[in-house]
Amino acid sequence: MQVVTGEEMREMDRHAMDDLGMKEELLMENAGRQAAHALEKKSAPAAGMKTAVLIGKGNNGGDGFVLARVLQEKGWNVDTLLLSDADAFQGAALYHKDLYERCGFTWEYWSEKKSERIRKEYTLIVDAMLGTGVKGELRQPFKEAADVLKKAEGTVAAVDIPSGVPSGEDPVPETAVQADVTITLQCPKISAYLQPASRFYGEVEAVDIGLPGKALRKEREKKQLWTGQDAAGTLERRSGDAHKGDHGRGLLIGGSAAMPGAIQMASKACLYSGAGLLTAAFPSSAAAVPAGAPPEVMMLPLQEENGYFSREVQTDDLSADAYDAVAAGPGMGRGKGAEVLVKQLVEQAEGTLLLDADALYFLPEHIEALQQRRQPVVLTPHPGEMARLAGVSVGEVTQRRFSLSRETAVRYNCCIVLKGPHTLVTMPDGTQTINTTGNEALARGGTGDILTGMILGMILKAQEIQPAVSNAVYLHGLAADLAVQHEFDSYAMASTDIISYLPPAFRSIISSL
Ligand SMILES: NC(=O)C1=CN([C@@H]2O[C@H](COP(=O)(O)OP(=O)(O)OC[C@H]3O[C@@H](n4cnc5c(N)ncnc54)[C@H](OP(=O)(O)O)[C@@H]3O)[C@@H](O)[C@H]2O)[C@@H](O)CC1
Ligand SMILES: [K+]
Image (cartoon, rainbow, N blue to C red; front, side):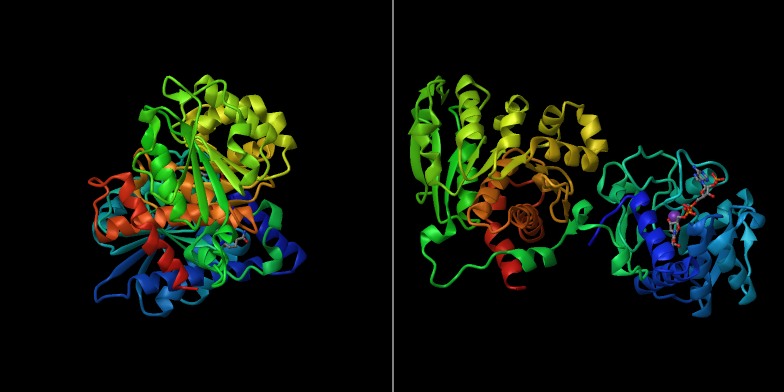
């Protein structure tokens, strides 16, 4: 499903109206009607149930008039409250206000005196005050109404977007409406996947308002949610007569005396994500040996210095060209040896390259070499590592996840996997997928190493990098979801427990094929 900014949504609407001749009144009818149906499905009206619909003068309010009409036609007990002057309505919103009145329905003005009623009397309160046209802090009386909704006992359902929440990457004013559910029109807006805006949305459901496919945006600029359906549709199948080489040879470089577990977790996750053959390269000191690595992994100890890779280490020692893909980073530290290895890999390694954790630290010095590489490179930063790659603060990464990922992926000529809630995968051509799995259990050390192993396993023989990376991210989150659903609590579990849920995660996708 495509995800957009408010501006992109407006362009699509404009295209549908100006170039394809679709009437705005019709789009608004579809929008309000579909939003009403979505609410009907969520809450079949019980005896005595009262619904309030709060309406502003813009097109979001126009949607509200349609919704209030449709629900009343179905026998719902609805009070419609206007927050703008009746004379301020224009265009399609005015058309639907008039139609509402001509159908015999009434409205009254919002007033402070009604606050107590709003708090107590209504089972459902629909926020059709402001949509994608909002700018800055809410003005009165919207601000007061948003405040009342925060204390309301009933369910708050926003149409398109909670009033006051920007649709893009602008800061969210604290005055915005806090919804329990948001019925978003046609495409979810990107702020639904940004912090802190996402907490204002509650549950998000998208409804189809009938925009023709021709009006949807150009492929190159696409941002889309990556769902179980996408995973099932793109997971590459394994042939019954394949041999181990057909499933790819991977090389995983990392580990140190201080962090031998990183490579161990990454190795196991890689084997559980489809790799045919895996070699782990690590500093040779006894302490750095990943003792608990699965027996299937081939070991390649390399020259070491104080428990880290030695500065004398050469990629020739790795025979990196013998592999379909190479991943480096987990637990390797930022010593001279790691620096030398990363430089050599970026400049010389053929095949797909995946860089994570400490390997990312050195990349700002190698942008030119990355730009010249022909084989794909995947980077998996958390927000702190992304801040260093992009040369901005962590706060800016959080606020501008979409635009910054795009700028950085284009600049580095890399696929960037920006981790966090709704991990974002951005390709060097700017296309983006937003992950839909995962939970707070992933916020612990080691889950990044597991993801690196999984991505390596899945890109080894991938026809296309993007679906392989998006699927690894999806399955990683799904494994964490299943672990929490079936056995663990997100509090009381370790990252390695997530690996044990990779088989059921894969099975759930494969069984839906
Ligand atoms: N386009 C289409 O075809 C379709 C669009 N659809 C719907 O349209 C919605 C977008 O509609 P929109 O552009 O009319 O904007 P909308 O959010 O209703 O409000 C604009 C008003 O807000 C006001 N205002 C602004 N900031 C404010 C603030 N801080 N505090 C208080 N007021 C503030 C501003 O007032 P002004 O500043 O001009 O006085 C202006 O009057 C979209 O979300 C979807 O629901 C659907 O019907 C499907 C078809
Ligand atoms: K709204």
